[in-house]
Structures are given as C-alpha cells and as structure tokens.
Length: 76
Image 1 (cartoon, rainbow, N blue to C red):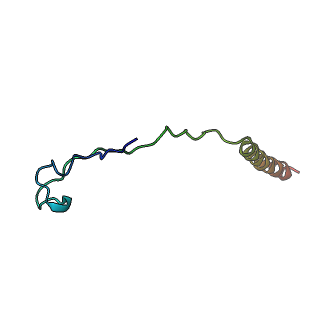
Image 2 (tube, rainbow, N blue to C red; image 1 turned 180 degrees about the vertical axis):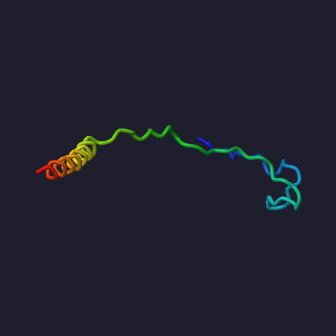
Image 3 (cartoon, rainbow, N blue to C red; image 1 turned 45 degrees about the vertical axis):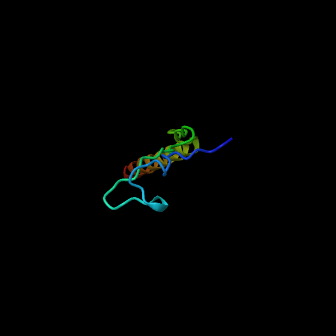
C-alpha cells in the first residue's frame, strides 16, 4: 500500500521556487482536502429524566398546599 501526496507534483507545478516556495503575489497550487466527521454524531435526548419530573411535581404540590393551608388559617 502506497501513500499519495494529495497535491500536484512540485516539480510539475508552475511558479514554484527551489524548496517548494511560492513567489510573492502568486497563489500556491490547490491540494485535496480531507476533513469532516468520520461518522454522524448521535443527537442528544430531549426528554427530562423521570426523577426531575417527579421532584418538580412535588415542589409544585408543596407550594400549592402551603397556600391552601394559609387560606384555611385565615378563616379560623
């Protein structure tokens, strides 16, 4: 198995100086691009955990019970 250089051969590319440099004002040759993800990333879940749902429900019930108790205390 051999590896290939993704860009053009420097000896065949025009306007390259010794050592592969590019003269001022000239653009380098295009090279292949290898980027991106190797596989699709999974989407995170959007559901609340059951424990969080239960705790929020208990908090709401506790606050409601407090206000109901205050109302009954006013009429005693």
